[in-house]
Image (cartoon, rainbow, N blue to C red; front, side, top):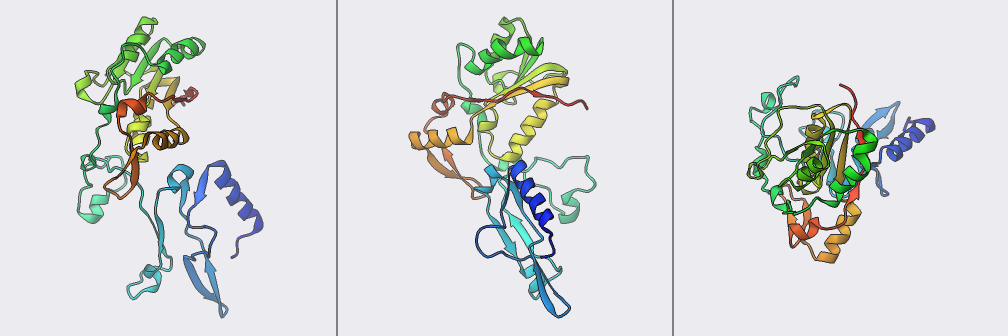
Length: 279
């Protein structure tokens, strides 16, 4: 390879600081994705990489396909890297793109409803506020000077009632219509909370969209508080509760507990408040 030592060190630094995994690196023999003769000698490079976050790399199949550059129907001088990412497609393509995939394929993307999951069934029927909500009013709203709050993914709304009782201008939103918390028409909240929402969404794409949507409601300089369960705690709970594995439409195997309510009662991992950047 022509890569200098300083470049290799910079690459390793990137992996470490961004918590990335070089999925095509491995400990075995490297798969080269580019080969060419230079001055009569074969030069081979691993110059096509698949860098994934550590939590994704464990369960995402990654494979190099060399026939696109070496086979009878080769059309490029680089191998292809295929990743089977567990992402739920959007129901429709966004409007603010340079071109749509359907313009190339002639086909519309599959609806997100093609993968069956019912996140609202994990919502608990609480008579009192959750420990996380009590921590918000006990430790965050005062120091942050928060007077208005949106509980994004509020379920049945017990935490919203707690926030209002604490004197906050609090509202709730949950996409499940049966809970009766429609999408607010206002934004600019001092504080937006998202409690145990990410854990019940099926894949990273859905979780990213949920975070982006929550952030849309906070004012510039406000804060978003996300409470979720750590992967380590979920793994421990799955082992102790004899959770049954289930296979998704993409072939990914995930654990499923004997009851949603039981798993939701596990102790949470609390995240610090995250300042929202100005638009």
